[in-house]
Length: 121
Image 1 (cartoon, rainbow, N blue to C red):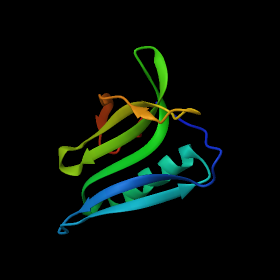
Image 2: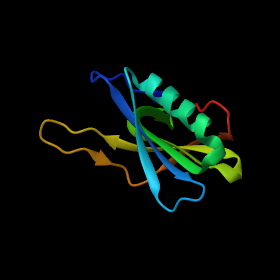
Image 3: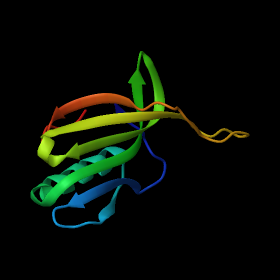
């Protein structure tokens, strides 16, 4: 998985969190000057909150190579903390063109699974 280089500053990725004892979910935007730093900051925030989390999801725009082909994708890192594993998924899409809208592929691909606390790919 490779994150895109953004012309927009700051770049935002999102963290969806579920905390112990709370019935509502919270969406936390993470701002940074690049995609890579945004993801690093989101992962650090999750690490800081880990003791109180039930689950988390980090979502960002990136590029993935699947079956030898590189494409734009929404990349998601998800974890139910009690499971002790974090999963990375990608939903590839075709970006909008001059006369067309963005189109997402129907399938979501599992691109990785690691023990909780490992740096994701």
